Length: 287
Image (cartoon, rainbow, N blue to C red):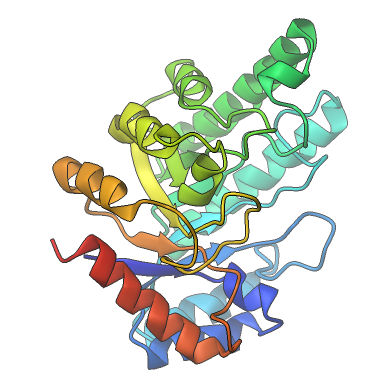
């Protein structure tokens, strides 16, 4: 089993990326997902700064950490689904820059939110607006995919399932979008917390079964079913045995990427990392 850790945890705890990487080294975490920024805030990982990029590559090599994935920026208005041509152009150009940086860093996967705006799910928009936004995502995504193929980069785009009130929260939407793109480049990042918030007993495992053939990355965290708190496994209500069974049958070999934002109850950072690793191994067992 490969275990990874999203550096968004350190951003959330006001710990620098460099310090966070040293903490992960202390606990022998071998894989990370580099969190970039909630667009409009100060970047946690500034991919536009060549010196920062080189420093992080050197730090990871020194700490024996592999950068498996990069989480692309997003915000409520900065999204591929934007109907503002200027915003969409910015998002696409930023994604191309991140693709080039990721290729330099040896990254395997770039995680992308196809949409981020609240109350944009299919049931909350008119059919006309939904279709326009879907077409915008399709157009922007395919431009990035064409860039990857033209450059002959060997990395992939993982579309993350969104919260229930946002576009692309369902398996059907994600699979439809992938069918309009290059399946050799585009797949899915499955976020367990987002899927569980549909509040149906079998919703998360049903969704995982529907997208498993497109699975490139996992975002592992728990939820109380009310908010997307990114809890440690076992602190919420997710039935992990169901997830484990599907992943075992799939023979999933990519890192189990822990996307934890809420520390354990005493708030200690290092103890949270230790406990997170222990719980993943306990709940998913070794394979």
